[in-house]
Amino acid sequence: MPSLNEEIRTLERKIQQLNLSYDHYFGGREPREPLALRSEVQRQLAYFSGSRITNTALRFRVGTLRARFQTLSQQWDRRLRELEEGIDDRQRFRKRQQGRAPASGNRKI
Image (cartoon, rainbow, N blue to C red; front, side, top):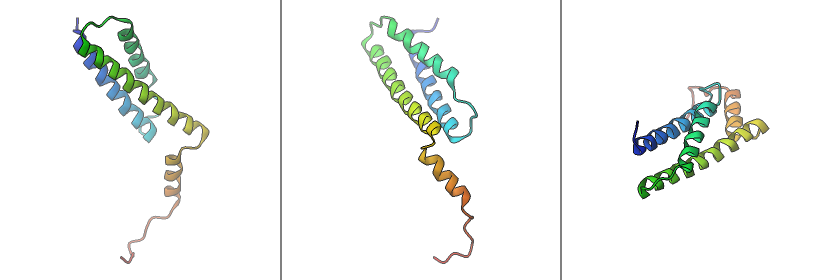
């Protein structure tokens, strides 16, 4: 049975992996949103929220991870909403760049 400290460290790594997975999803490298990993992280955070942690340092780490996850979730949800509504500026920029002809090699500087 892993210690509480190891479980918190594992949760921290999963949050980092989830953030990277969302970056890949929004960048077009992943075809699907990482919902399974996101629900797993939410489940673990709910477990820690319901458990009594007597060590102040570990309780602080869990609170920090919960806040970080909440902030990232809001960013992901906002970005998903922008993509669904078609108001994502990054996507528009990429489309404009793809529509332009490549620069010729005969440029004067």
